[in-house]
Length: 269
Ligand SMILES: [Zn+2]
Image: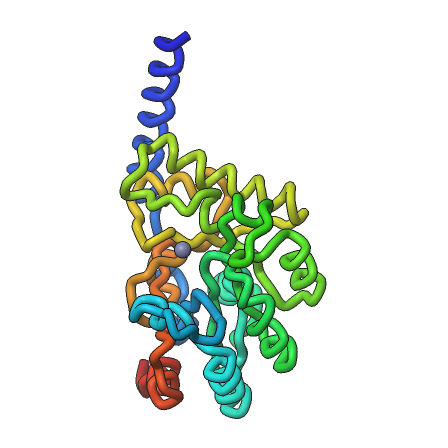
């Protein structure tokens, strides 16, 4: 039995590696087919925790935590200045010319499924009718904790039609530190979890801790994802790999002027 498992694992790993090379060669061949209609670059914002700061917070806690007041001011700025938050599913449709690009598009993403996103950010997003993307660690949606959203919270937001749910793996695994078979399993099982728990078809993925490799990208393709985000900083455009989308981190210490600088696409880009 043990020998069978080892052989099976090796075969799966070899298949993933071979597919990885093949898929990379096929890569982005469709992208340059219509250069005259290339959509302009846009920012994908990366948030983690939305919550009041506690006196005990470390610098890292403060960096990851945007207060509800700051978040509200940031969303008001986007609203008053004509931004249109879209989901990654919508961005994919736009990049495939199946949907038109709205004015000043921007993507708002929230990693990990922090409960404060439901408690504090969601009412603000709802007030503005903003679309957003929630990357959940699927194991944590099934247990009751003070820190993570539960299934009922996510289902409540899904009913609004504003949220896209994406995978952040089942156990928040950094694929750079995982065996290939574990990577394949985490990528695929979390998509199944989302379908089973939420009756929702997740097509976007977020690499935990930003770690990524070719094995993981191949696993994403095999398991049916179309987009994935990293923690690399910068704007995105259709010419980049859709599985290595850059983002712009919104830091809890950012003042409104910092936020404005981060969401402003320089002229000529
Ligand atoms: Zn994370």
